[in-house]
Amino acid sequence: MKNYIGKIHVKWCKNCNVPLLGKKCGICGEDSVEVKLTPPGDARIAFKYDIDFINLIIERDYSKRALSYKKIILINKIPGDEESYEIIEDGVVKYLISYDIDKGWRVKLKPYGALKLKDSKKYIKVDKKVAEILKNRKISILRPGILEFGEFEKGDDVLIFDEDNNLLGVGLAQISSDEAIKLNKGKIVKVRGILDREVEGKEYESLEEALNKMVEANKEVLNRYEINSIGFIKNTYKKINKKVIVPFSGGKDSLTTLILTLKAISRENIEVIFIDTGLEFPETLENIKEVEEKYNIKIKVLKPNKSFWELLDKYGIPGRDYRWCSEALKLEPLKEYIKDEVLAFVGLRKYESYNRAKKKLIERNTYIKKQINAYPIFHWSSLHVWIFLLKEKAPYNKLYEKGFDRIGCYLCPAMGLGEIERVKELYNNLWEKFERELRKYFNEEEIKKGLWRWKNPQ
Ligand SMILES: [Zn+2]
Image 1 (cartoon, rainbow, N blue to C red):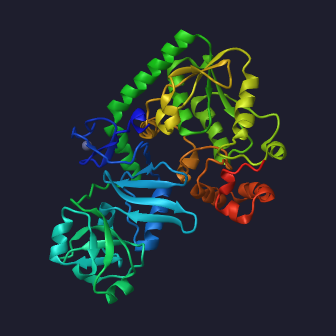
Image 2 (cartoon, rainbow, N blue to C red):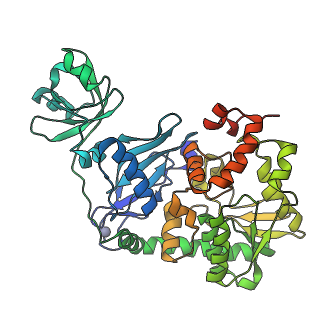
Image 3 (tube, rainbow, N blue to C red):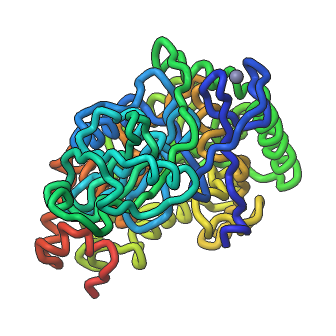
């Protein structure tokens, strides 16, 4: 499967310290280097909120805000049930953050990330012999090779220094420092990563300046993508020759698709449609107005006949394997609205999930038979989309600046636990209403652990 979808090659300019979509930097002309990411590698740009958020997690364990606010930071989601992200700074993965049901958000150090946390109390100092071996091999460090201990607990990430205080790498403590000191043998730290070079990329005056530089460095490559997508829209429109709709969700991908479609086809031939499920975030509804204003268009708003709350008694709590809500609240209103055949330009991208990688660029909608879907940004990565939106100064949904990866309903069973925490924090009243319903079917434990997202109560 992994081979089928292909890996996204995120690259970096070491000079300008910005991510690159192509082989060369558009500012300095330097060859790009590959950023080693976990596939699919659909990394996004961190906003100030994200940098704050990650810094707080790091600070809790290491008493330091390690990430810069004046560089481009990327966040790469690792596939899995709960949230887990690689944090990229200076073109390398420095930290892993993940959500744990019991402990909340946790950070794991990578060697490059440890470089910024040299003052940490969680460390060991090893003798020359161990230091020599560590240059080539990840080993378990035994008690006799350790000269000095900081303070750490079992399961902590520990920085490993040589006698001269050079950082060698990071490892996982197999035992607490208090206990380790008393021993004279045994495994103390299992090495996870070894440092092979120093990395420290340049800082800009501000995050905003760094973002502008990133846009500049990628202008040419992005332009090619834009021309291709606009060409695709024009050709498809000519070939299919039907009324055009753009389903707009309030998310970045559909906004990108909308802007490209507006550039390709004259606007009186496009109908933009937003389906208000009744479970939208206020930011999303606000975004509809912002987009209307900026592009001087009118967005048609469709609503389901019956609300989610009315349907809840009949169908029960939706789950990941039982998403009646998507059908009843999103697909049904559109299906009813579409009387004659239409051509829909949809912001679907192949990297969003493995399931989507197999799709054709033009295909009939399986649920709405009168709708032919076409995907102008199918080959774009999240980074393409973000650089495009920043270049266009497009009014993207403010939720993206509040830590959200995806824009959807505020009670979607596809959400991770960390995302649910974020909803509770931001809109406790909205979440509370849903939780009252959850309590009819699930106990506190099942709600807390998010088990409701899978178990169909019927
Ligand atoms: Zn450069």
